[in-house]
Image (cartoon, rainbow, N blue to C red; front, top):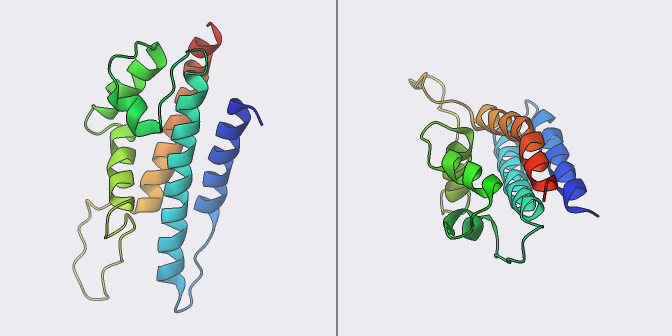
Length: 152
């Protein structure tokens, strides 16, 4: 499978996971959390695949998206664009990276819904909605990143 095909496959799988209904039985909250964290994990794989894709014209090897984004000595325009987004508060990539840190932490990334009768903050966006936003923004940015990479 080509790097482009792998990135596309992973992004499609995220769509499939986010489109799943958790149902309304007693297992629905756990199923919702599992679907959200699975979609987040797939987005992480898609980000990693994208970075491998847009750096395939270099001789450089890095172990995962964290190294690619952290290594500021690599001067690839596509990486610079992604680093800029990662460091911009409120951007889809900054949000995604925060959620990925939580995913790898002890508490996980998915949030339990407040119990009935509890006051919930209106500012809290459901994880599935955040992931859908990150997914849309990544897909919108993808053609521009690929175009720059193809020029090499």
